[in-house]
Image 1 (cartoon, helix red, strand yellow):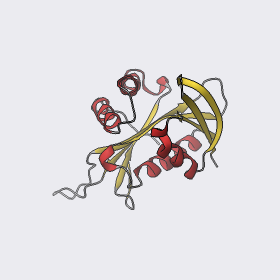
Image 2: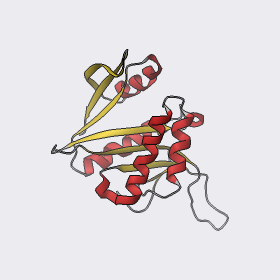
Image 3: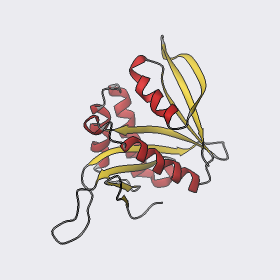
Length: 181
């Protein structure tokens, strides 16, 4: 999956698996724009990009970036535009075929266009090609995250567990799982 970006003509997106230094700022900006994440969580998201840049695949963090495909350049070349979303995923240490979906983020100004679904499909394909058969995702139980939970359920995930007061009093962790076929 690594290497050349994959262009999906139907979605108008280019998917890139390689991490570049500019992705630290792109991840920060997109993650902040959603209004879902605290400053600490944004810092964590940036840190995962930095760790991947420093350690490469050995970090255990893998990324897929969605970039808008604005069309062909004047010279006829095809090039990607702005980064509009990303996923961060990786194998769960100590398991044989389970992966975590650590982050799936689409910039606030691009939400509702199917970018999250396209990123999830790309991530599921990458997980399957790495021998993964289960993909886990977790989210907050707060009302703010109702759209996130609907997204997971409508994407074939099922709720596996609820950990009461995990993040803070009144804010539990909901763990979802999807079998990858």
